[in-house]
Image 1 (cartoon, rainbow over the protein chains, first blue to last red):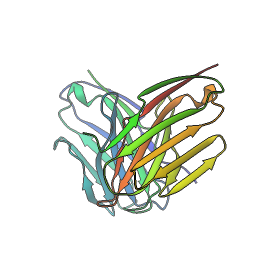
Image 2: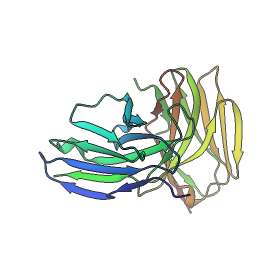
Image 3: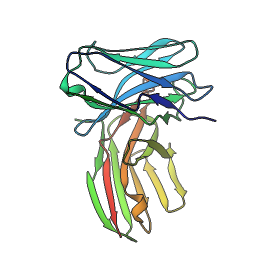
Image 4: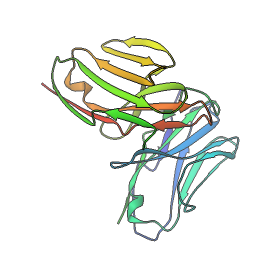
Length: 113
Length: 109
């Protein structure tokens, strides 16, 4: 069974631009969560989607948004990029909201210059 | 204050040493995970615990629900164990994951 995949793996953007990251969950997993990882803050929860609906949201500004498609694939978008948005963005999938097992993708390394 | 605290933040050990990483949390949880992250980013789950103790090869994880504390032990450490180890809890309200800031382990040959 294929694992969680994320594209692209690396991305360099300029301050003020916007970016879209993609995540394909494990087959049969309907919940997708997004996390931001930075050296100073560790892993921080952005949001979780299940059945195309946002179920939980972390404490991030409205510039961070996401969506989920009917095939459970998810995208996250960051608008008006800031230098502080440079981070590793990880997505993780689980069968459903509340499932204890979660599987991570390899991440997208975003650098904002 | 972070709801999940790990110690130490950084750890350097000689090959063969016994290693302990600690995790304390301040919220009610449904389960606790120990995760391993190698350079390059990929995260894998080593253990999921809701009580007691689990062992897999040279790794042992324990949890004390009453004391809100978990430990990850590595026996006979090896350079390939060098990684960041992250403690994550699932709060029993909301079902979200909350993470410690990680322990960076370096095992020297």
